Image (cartoon, rainbow, N blue to C red; front, side, top):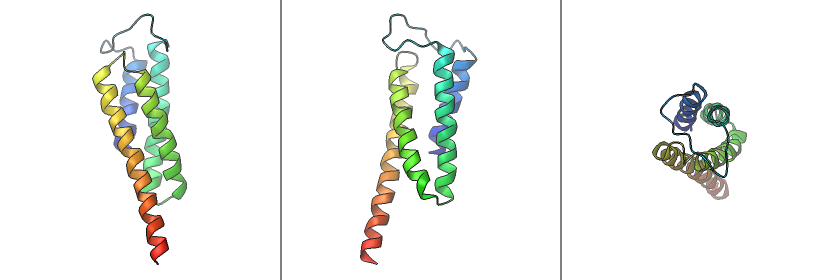
Length: 116
């Protein structure tokens, strides 16, 4: 989660600074400015990073919050595909793995509680 959050933060900073790395597309259905997308990724990245730190601290609410934020991050990167497809696909995969890991952790804890 922390790695995925850091990746989103770097993506957001690069977009806000109007880096020449990104390609500006025209006539895209979800047309935002590059800086607008940068702020979306920066905010989601900070939220994901903070949720990852809270999961390490053992907060149960952080798992649910992390699933929600990682889901939003995957959707945001899906919409980000025209700007930088390879990076967006990598971050989508990371977010899906975060969701899977958080849900499997909750599933295993529920099984342990039933057997105890």
